[in-house]
Length: 364
Ligand SMILES: NC(=O)c1ccc[n+]([C@@H]2O[C@H](COP(=O)([O-])OP(=O)(O)OC[C@H]3O[C@@H](n4cnc5c(N)ncnc54)[C@H](O)[C@@H]3O)[C@@H](O)[C@H]2O)c1
Ligand SMILES: O=C(O)C[C@H](O)C(=O)O
Image 1 (cartoon, rainbow, N blue to C red):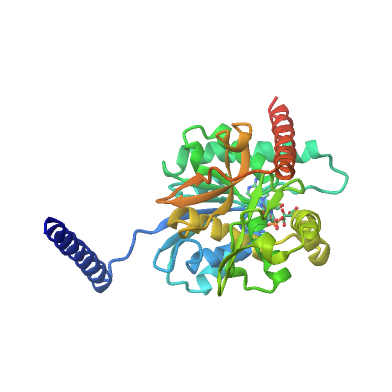
Image 2 (tube, rainbow, N blue to C red):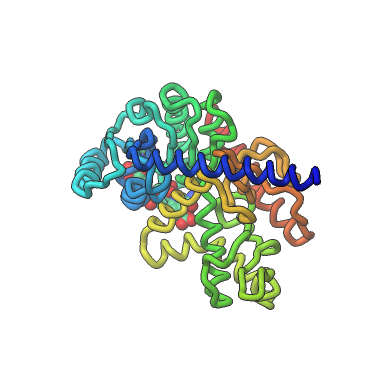
């Protein structure tokens, strides 16, 4: 009897809560109360990824179709005219969600009040240049931009570094923006994650949306480890393991890995330019899932500050499987790592340790 009364009470309370929640949401829509705009910074905005990503942001692909945005676009002086062209096109496109545009070559102005910073600007490797020269240029760019974010961005600003070497640029940014919480500084490996999903879907002829939980471990470079050991595919008879469906461990352990690792180079060979639309779209995926949350039962890959999970040296920006909730990511724990995977996790960690040492040597 007591149980029945308790159950009735629970049902009445739940019904009332749901009813009032729906009523509030309805009234909100009815009164047409708009959300406060979120300010998004895109550096390198006159470049290829910049040109692809700003309309995506202005259309709601990053923060949702009901989230107004203000775009801050930064580039360097030689690109000022092109940057102004992008600003003109944004105005011409008349995006309903776009509440303001700032196009500037002044980092301090660009960083003012920024809630989300997408760092695409950087110094590309040119013919005949040593790794150290490229690193040294990017270290000084990320040091300066970190200081501008530190001084002018919103306190809870979330940062995504896209420009290569993405993990190490993010690490330098973290070092020189000590008041930005370390959990708010990340780098892009979602493109590699999406590439891995795409390759599996092509191989077994299923829709890419039915494949989930691949992992990119480590560096956004050719040492990254695309891991399918925990990945599944939704089928009419339930979720099936990717290894079971592909039924070709040889392919998964060699050709598949190399294909994902080298995909960036393959795009450069084909387009004579590096990936831009897929990079822009994946950067939107990264921020959207971080801010709005990952769907239940699904994880994504993000380059985040290592806390020592899976034996990875703390203090590196390393790509892990993460889930996101209420604007915070957490590393998925407890996944079984076999011997083959262990060696791959360690190899990409080693490359990041060396990159960190090289970057720090450029600070001297
Ligand atoms: N992490 C990833 O998955 C991923 C994928 C693709 C490309 N990338 C990297 O993203 C970066 C951008 O690629 P892109 O194709 O747009 O290059 P791009 O050369 O077309 O554009 C780069 C832009 O950055 C600007 N820039 C240079 N120094 C700057 C500075 N100090 N401040 C602000 N802007 C500055 C340049 O003027 C240029 O407009 C590259 O480093 C590329 O290697 C990363
Ligand atoms: O710009 C590059 O070198 C390649 C890029 O990082 C990519 O993965 O497409």
